[in-house]
Image (tube, rainbow, N blue to C red):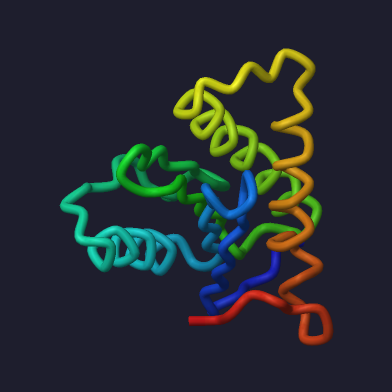
Length: 137
């Protein structure tokens, strides 16, 4: 059964020695959309995020080259579904970075290690009281 979470969770996951990052928001759909759009506004970008989390589990936005990719995941998912969705969206975000940098990732190592980093820092286990490393908005 899915759990209801009202707090917005955010974490920045560094990629390629801090040169790039993936910004991850987990929370109610409307809060995730608002926070992601505010992040771009604070960076001085007049970029409108296309798509929404309505009827979706998660979404990845390619904001390169002006801003790093942003991932949004709904918080009302069961932990196993949240982890699977986060891994799926991380794959897209890392693909955006690989294309931007021209990285040849034929063996898939960049993507594999990047997905691992996202899950380690932003996975559902991190949102518990004891293990939370990200910050709540």
